[in-house]
Image (cartoon, rainbow over all chains, first blue to last red; front, side):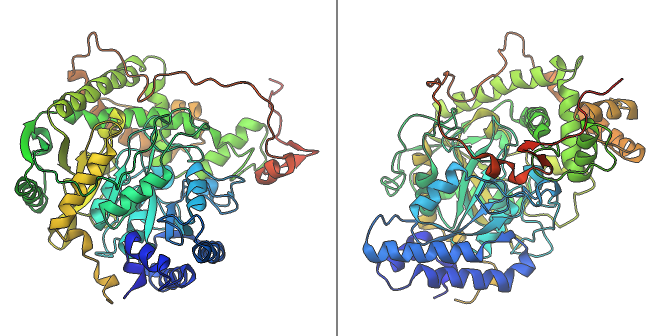
Length: 490
Length: 98
């Protein structure tokens, strides 16, 4: 038995029956990180000392039988944009390279309270800006299925750490596909919850009205378990829902017979890799066999999802990133600075990578006098239409099925010189964020030996149905159980 | 085809307080033109009488009592500041003489 390949459910059983200890499990994970991660490079920071300390506490909790949750003693990794007290939090940016937060994000606190064990912080595209993890200011992360390929982005480190069995679950963040797209590229399960379901307090903002923290796991059951632990109202984030978090695992085994699965014709157009298309057709057939009714629906504004998403992202990000000014925290460059503006100019020039600079400038352009109506306001109007598309489509079915990306993982360097081509790889995942609806990514097969991802899109706050339908698929398929050769030691 | 010249690039760089070299301005200028061109696709959409989205989930104001509560202590708070003096964050001249 390879401890690092276990699901949360399996590991938790072994911990509770005292067949293994959390210290053993955590040491196995840390050893594997130190042996394997030099190839994958999914971690920016490994928290050995903290992890062993948390593991020891978890073992004490289990010994006493007090306060044991399904996550007690389970090692996890977290995207490096979520604040961790006394642990460096970089957003994979030079501007925050040595930044050590003085406080925890709400999600960090919730996981610590549940007894989960933080083993490290994962690499990402700088501030979440990218689709391949190649915009990290530190290093590239490699896809565990083929080290010459990208893991996807922006939660590429999180997906790769999960896929390479360098943790038992991972916490990512999805602004416009940043959990789902890399989950698809790396053969893991991951959810972008409804906007407002998980507190953003302590998450370093990219787009405040899109950002959603979400777990990445081995299967839908684990994903439900983790989301349940991190979701809920938070007085420190006034956009969180007041409504109670349901038990996502309670009805996960209920049959899905008779439920309606919507297929949007706009998601199946030219440009999709043949192997991705056939994997989608096969998934639809699987659901048909499980008794779901397949319905064709229309999301007429799909092609405008990408420009709407990027315009609003640029605008919100240009304003959110104003806080990095070299005076209060983070990098500060003040060579012969004659005034405070000079510190801003120098620090931001030295501290931000090209993609971040591009997006901030385009944001300022879209918001500036003379262009505001044509770009920002227009995008907010089309956003209303995108949202209505989902409302209309989901009024006639329970759930929608779509691919997470038109292709499988591309090669490192393939799209780095063409920003627009890189943006286009997000075409299937971006529209859900401006609309706020939840979406669950699941492994759906392989095309030329690389994983294919699909996503189920649901109604606002209806994550339970997503998990139920995702779990039903994983009971009759084994794609999610396949591991890259890097992990074949079982 | 939209063209965003280097002058515009430098202007927006200044709006976001970003130092920029001549060479960078030229690279960005080419890239911006093709990206903005792509965005112009939105002009095809009829948005007459469409209300722009302003909130995404809960359109409710959240209010609370204005109570005095303990906050982070000053020493801890200043730990990340590059330059401090007597418990304050230190920066060069904010308002110039010009």
